Image (cartoon, rainbow, N blue to C red):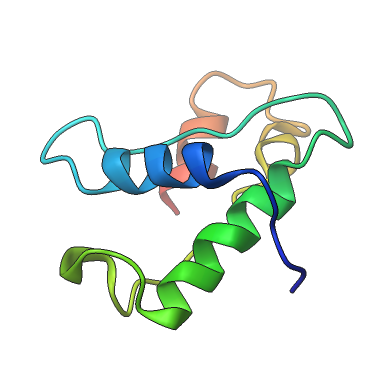
Amino acid sequence: MTLVLCRNYEIDLMIDILCRRRKNNPVVVGEAGVGKSALIEGLALRIVAGQVPDKLKNTDIMTLDLGALQAGASVKGEFEKRFKG
């Protein structure tokens, strides 16, 4: 992992969202090369270092490839089936 610079606001915002009781799923979107992966790595570094609220300590981070889930899912309900299964 690389050092994440000047993204503390965004990382803090993700931490705040993750600690909410409801609507606690941050979605990171943007053009290629803007630092989405680095932002997630910064969050992961904070989790590993224990620099997050207790609720987030020992949390696993997973990626979801929506493109792969949608590929070939032309039949209604196929995308949902893949997502759940």
